[in-house]
Length: 161
Image 1 (cartoon, rainbow, N blue to C red):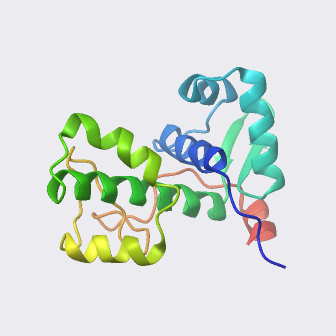
Image 2: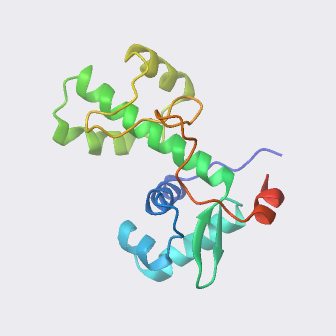
């Protein structure tokens, strides 16, 4: 059975959980709601959906972590966004103030084939035009680390792998 397509909202939430948890801490629903500009109830409903899809784990009063699958989606969205920002700035000449919003609109619809062509055309860049690192095609950061996101518990990872 094919996996259901992930909506833009799901992808955005996963990216924000990843970023908020990049220091190794668990992410609170309140912090996530604030980052997404939604109510805590809306964020909580999405976290339940992410948990049901085995993309995140939420332990009451302990916060949210991403599963391996959720982390991979988040990294892919970050990669798309940062490659697009660089492509828009360097190839199309968009001003740095404008690339973020354009990349935000395109990051969810870019194909893997186009991503690879943009990556190759840009010479396999390691950083976007703002200086932020770009995960490579294997979703590894330029300094060789695989991830900065906290991991779900081993038992949970084994169940969701």
